[in-house]
Image 1 (cartoon, helix red, strand yellow):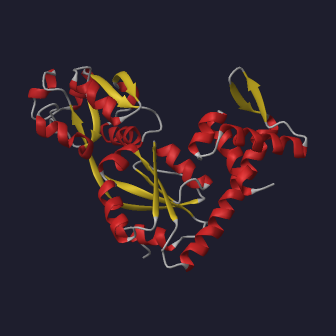
Image 2 (cartoon, one colour):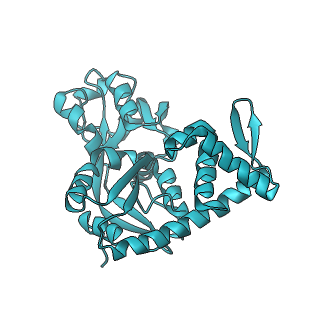
Image 3 (tube, one colour):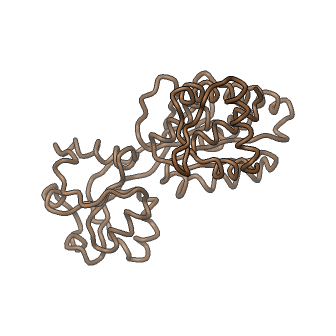
Length: 295
């Protein structure tokens, strides 16, 4: 059994598609299929069921996936230790961040880091808060950045300065002409919100408690999987939303959105790292850059 076979197996298992996995890790489909077949033949265990054009993990495959990820994570830790000995002349830094952070807050830091350490490859992925936490826990990400609270005893969580939630409406909406909103306004209008698991949604839900409200009290017309989809729906007059001031800034400046005043809180962003994993010099440098270095 080789690390390459494990990488191929994990890639195929996560995508449940041989061709897509092969493209992602830059090998041929036949090489990916051969690696899976070699594992199954060598140990006389079926790892995947073929269902039409797709594949699904068997019970044995699901068990093996956990172990394979663990081995690859430990191998990556060993590699990071060796890369540090090279004085940051090579290596990869994997960052997973929620959508608001990766689209509106993180890019300047990525650009600065690349200028300072051009030999370190940055691998950046996006997801909602729960997906980022899972990726950091499982070792798919060295560092995670999220908006929402995380309860995982395996992860260290450090707060840094973040953004502010604001309520926005389309310019033709009935509430657009009101300089300030009241609680009754929130209860009488339709809402467009991010999906469950989104940090923005979680923070808004927490903020509502200060006004003795829950999301169940609101008329939620749509749940959208991205900030851009939410803003587009609100601009079109579908309803009202609570969103990061960073996300809405451009639309507010151009007049496509309006933000009546309502006392929602400033919020911190949270930096995630696995407590038991080696912290590379590249990780330390990036954490220092964003103001989350060792204290």
